[in-house]
Length: 470
Ligand SMILES: [Zn+2]
Image 1 (cartoon, rainbow, N blue to C red):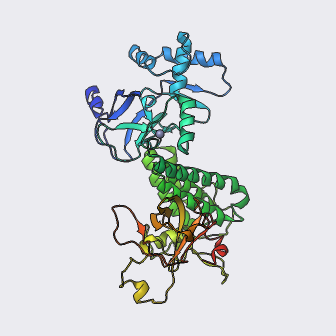
Image 2: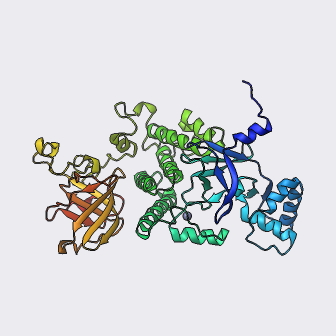
Image 3: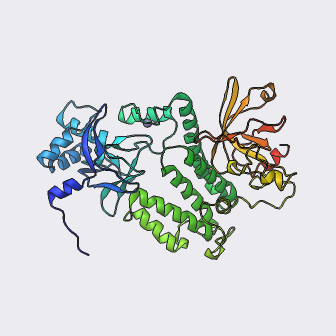
């Protein structure tokens, strides 16, 4: 293979971005052409790198000055035009202030400032992600979704973003600006829902970490359920796929710790795909997942117990990724203790997801035609509830679909606690036939006594006995 070295002019033309003035934000990076998801937008070598451990103020200042001295005239001019939110009472203090305002953390103890990456502005739902590639000694930036020509390229400065108030507080403390991204500019009601979903995803991540030592082999199902609920929240948060990656990572930990190589291979495949999107084929993490995909047993958590031991031969031959039954298998939803008194809330015949509900007035429905005496119950986890003339409830079902239910406000519901996270059950629920674009609704024709709400949060399996009266 021959590598063609582009002449300088061609190399400049090949840039996918330009540094331009962005109203209200100083300089920023703007896409100069359409960029598809997963594309490496740039790979930047640092101008200045500092090992922050055991560093005195004076030594840090002298290291910055030394490395600044090595930049050429043009680069120094660019450096000095960067924002400084700290003191600039002397030239040296100004250099340090610029560095501290614009540097990125590259490893647990090192920070660095880059000519291009340090110009990228923040958005909480960033369209790109920066990643320190130790193999290249460069910071890469990859598109997290398709970008249009002229769109500003953004990364998220907040590690694991939570609710709006918390994000704004952190951004002000560390960077002194008020974010006005799409997520921060959502109308109040929508924003409350996003906040709830983001916080819940992160709370579940923490809960997994806190319970790992106690439950990783003794009660792995609880941890897997925690990762599953997290993955469901991450799909809804509208931010990007970084959160989903964390959920899959945790699921892989508990699956592989208990020897389940068949399911581990699926999570490794999903993580490898996402890792390539965020860091490319040559990143250390991609190479690591690539090695696991060839030999899952290499994973550091493999085999703490053989509780769930499987081999690749145990992959279900009749199921394909993307099918609901495949997800049921993957998340081990159908395996409950053979206790006849327990209800299996993952039994889709009794507890169908929204897409499997019969359509209102559809007399051809299998529910009525073939099984005239069949009983079914729709279960949803409450995300949002507003009460005025009507009772508008938003829930998420077993497949992570967002479903809305709008009911006449009635005294019948006064005793119900429509709190977020509680479970709502509707016996004989039907889908509303006139779907507004993108809105999934359940028919308001609910028979008296067929709607219940229980203080049952998240884990439909372990708390199944508590819903036996639905
Ligand atoms: Zn924001």
